[in-house]
Amino acid sequence: MDVSADIVIDLLLGGSLVGILYLIAAVGAVRAFRVRGPRAPSSPHAPPVTILKPVCGDEPGLYENLRSFCEQDYPTVQVVFGARHSGDSALPVVRRLMRDLPDADLSVVVAGGTRGANQKVGNLANMMSVVRHDVLVIADSDMRVRPDYLTAVVSPLGDPRVGLVTCLYVGRPVRGLWAALGAMSINYGFVPLVLVGRLIGAMEGCFGATIVLRREVLDRIGGFAPFSNQLADDFALGEAVRALGWRAELSRYVVDNLVSESEFRQLLQHELRWARTIRAITPFGYACSVITLPLGLSLLAVALSWGSAEAVTVFLIAYICRLILVRVIERTFGLDAESSWWVPVRDLLSLVVFAVSFCGKKVVWRDRELRTGSDGRLFAGRSSR
Image 1: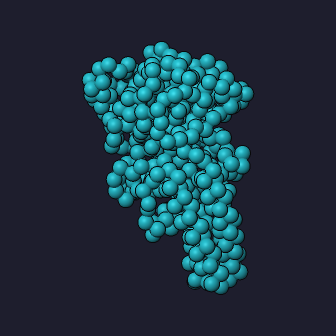
Image 2: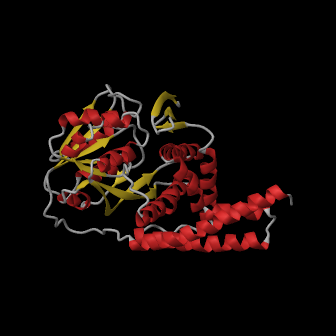
Image 3: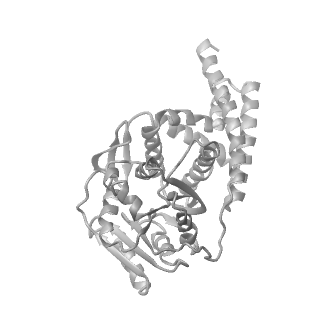
């Protein structure tokens, strides 16, 4: 074996050892997080709320997802749906929901006059024309919640120092292998990374699963307009709120994200969009995040060293630590147990996505091809269809 191969193997093993320490820290961070279980509404802080639900196309489980936000154990709720054009395939689902829940305060805004490459943000800006309440809840269309959701996520705003509330989310696969692998990426990659960052004070995330803020706060940061060309609009919004001195609160409530990718191409496009988004907004942090994949790194070391005892030992330690973390996550968040054999497959796929994310700036989002700039800004491309 030549010297260059030895160096690569040593780097892989060194990264794996650091990654094993990360896995141990992640077990502690997950165990320290207390998930809020179902409970009756009891918070004294329950101001009227408007939920903003931008939609773009039909997707598996869309009706059930949207309905879960409309059936809340909460005093006063307005739900506003928004689409960019009258032919959007999500609109028949929205209208069916409005027929099925005639007593709910539901409305829909259809307007195509949006500025900027981020059409979701443009959609949100258009929806503000019918908003009636001062507390806003923004949530992506692929999220599903329980009836106690609003009570949990709105109550922290009773503290005037809190400017924004956000939520973790876990992946719930709809059906099939690719959806299951996508959910594993969320549950065993994203979730522990966020909780470790939170534990050490290195990550103040804001996630599209849920963003809760007062209208006054939104007005102070300039409304939605400053984020109209941001790929990571949720992250940028959170940064803007914190920059004005307010605190962003991570709720103990965990939202379900319905993962519905039915083929490898869809899964790869989705995960590359995530990866290139993070790389654009925090390039150094993203490069360092490879250490969160010690199972994949050590498996590569095993292959390159032709199964050396040292590499195999590191791989086995990483595998055991990874499985412990997976089981702790499953117990903490009430997830179905995954087969142990799929864990290294998922980590190898994550390593592939990590490597490919450096090979371009194109992302595909809701069938639109876009490019990311070095600062996370979006540039319009074309439809991928």
